[in-house]
Length: 305
Image 1 (cartoon, rainbow, N blue to C red):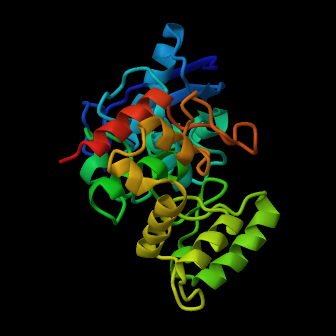
Image 2: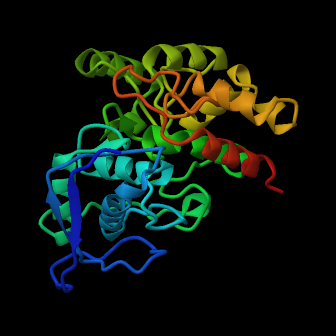
Image 3: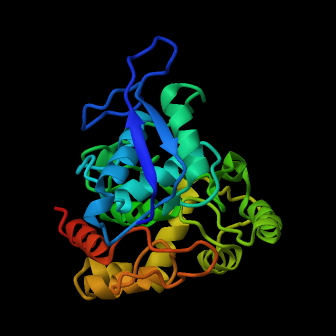
């Protein structure tokens, strides 16, 4: 964790500030303002004790802006739930980068959102397992797929896109992709890949070559099938079954560790059992959660009645 100084200054509520849109687990003044003194914060682990107050200040600001940092609340640990909250904030307010760090520019914008200098975006209220107090912490949007498979999709989408079906690299929202056919999307991905270095698109951040490969195996009519939420989930589920052993894992024929490593082979935000992203060092890729946390979530999902 790297930081110099970051502090919160609480102010009295004013009538011209939009109220908090989040069901808060913790009592945070909805109109608290943040004063940021230039620095950068980065995700752990580890979580050094001397970093605790700086991270608590960040978490307080995120909660005040409407982003849950998970059921553990303001605990001073920049872990996967805080990472997801930072990523969602960056997506909403067009801040460059992913959720694994936030620099002075992002912190300044967060301060202005909290104090009302920047109008707040309308963020869908989290529901289901990823609601405040749930197992996965902040998610902008839950999977349209229910049950255990939907929970696996949420696990992947948290560090990849904060659950947003319209997410594109780098940490941007592009709602137009939801109305594109697969063929149109592939052309759009080609152009964006040249411009930004990555064509990653949608809730599961598929790059163009992987998407084309998976879709071709499904036999979809790419000229007419839209890249809407339902299609995105179908693509991811087919991919999980074909390449990652989803059914074997659900039926107990594959260990949580083996399944996690298979997921990490596709999704950079998912850690391998050694805790590192398989794609660390490529662009800004890094694991968005710790291995122990990921394994704990897989165990929980597998044992859902």
